[in-house]
Length: 97
Image (tube, rainbow, N blue to C red; front, side):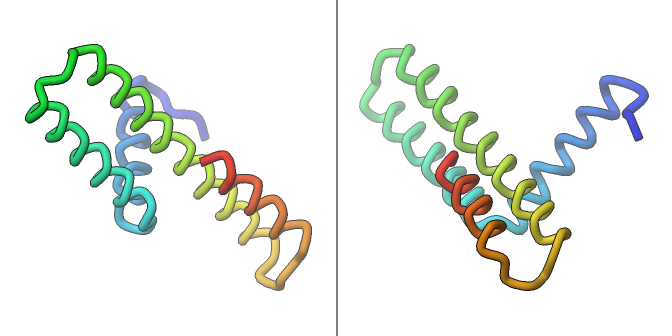
């Protein structure tokens, strides 16, 4: 089912972020890393461009972690039994992060 408005899409994205934060350890780890380096950047008074790099890297990690989680959930829906091909798919998705 498609979202009807832009704001409904935003609500879905926020729900996804909350789900990722609650269920994925790596998502929480990336949050800590981004916050830690933001504080370090503030204390060291780094060039403002460094904040842009931090945001780009952090958002990239968050986005890829969400894609990895989605791929893992799709694979788990396909079968609960061990499958070597699905393991390879999950491993490749993890490499993307």
